[in-house]
Amino acid sequence: MDQQTSAAGRRTVPGAALLVAAGLTLVAGCSADPGGSAGTPGAAGVRDPYFPRLGNGGYDVTHYDLALDVDSTGSRLSGTAVITARATQDLSAFNLDLAGLEVRSATVEGRPAAVNRAGPELTLRPDRGVAGSLREGGTFRTVVRYAGSPRTVTDADGSEEGWLRTADGAVALGEPAGSTAWFPGNHHPGDKASYDIRVTVPEGRSAVSNGELVSRRTSGGRTAFHWRTRAPMASYLATVAVGRYTVRETVTGDGLPVVTAVAPEVAGASAGVLARIPEVIAWAEERFGPYPFSSAGAVVGRRGDAGYALETQTRPFFPGPPDTGLLVHELAHQWFGDSVTPASWRDMWLNEGFATYAEWLWDADHGGAPVAESFGKAYADEANWAFPASRPPGAADLSRPPVYGRGAMVVHRIRQEMDDDEAFFGLLRGWPAEYRHGNASTADFTAYAERRSGLDLTELWETWLDGGSRPPVG
Image (cartoon, rainbow, N blue to C red; front, top):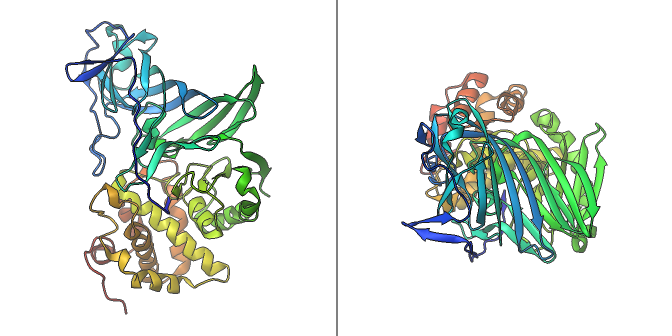
């Protein structure tokens, strides 16, 4: 992610069919045997250090199949989410995260489930007849039908995410919690899954999402797009962009599909930078190892569609024409953040530190500032020392400079301590290979880096990553 501006204002649309009962909202039209199944309820939240209520315990999602029908203004949608999951405990009930939209019905293993709502938390209590599927290790399928006007979610730092209206549609951006605004799920980066995303829009509009386009069919004035992402993806990296985009499909010299979708108003100004996507990917493969996904590309909106760029998986989003440095940053995230995803939001520096360091490397390799000079500028910038990169004070600080600049300095300090570029770049390539399509924490990276480098990183971590003041250099 690259934070450019901040915006305020939260738009909420209460579900019209919700009844208030005992401090919760009970979804009308859902019925089930109230006895539930043997077991205990899954936790409502996974106790993330910054978003303790985000995500849910008791199960692991393996696949989302989302069908969305979007109106001509992008202001309303109706959706069906088919969620396939594996129980990690014996479940009597479990939660899904969904903000604002009205739930019309829910089933588990084809049988109606009772649904209670408390704000953005749905609690589903399955019929007792499906108890066998909800035992630890069992696989079960949940279907949720929902509709309404998706909300814009205001992040703790004031930026807007979720379902963002544009001049001719909408774009869905999810970091860190915006994905709760447009589909129900287990919305914590620790639970990655594959996706099928089907979006039906008025004829003449495009719907662009992650992965590869499986089909496109027009009938009765509506066009249905089906996108598929086979590689595991954190929900905050899922996106849908609906509008009158100019969509172009090409391939790199190695045969990798590249899909770009650009708002017509900025198509000319974006063309030169987007044409460099194959070049940037080829360069990044030399530095970081094989590209981790089966397609690449970008979505470029109008200026003002959002206040930031975001590394949405295989299809990073840019609010207006990107420059080359921003393109490098968001494409580097495909390795660092998208394929290797943080175990919790406290590990965000692993995303942003490596992506920022990728910018330094690109500059050095293309006639710009040497990495040592970029390091020196970051070191001199007071903003990078406001707090430790590994311990932002609160959720509002996750996209502030220390997470980016100080994180990149930590990477360079490892390089300096190793004093062997061949070994260092081996370490850099090995990290996304070792945790490919998985999750990793700061502790995981510490153990990995010490093993690969042969260094004891305790002192470096205490001063550069975790320390409260700027250490001397010499």
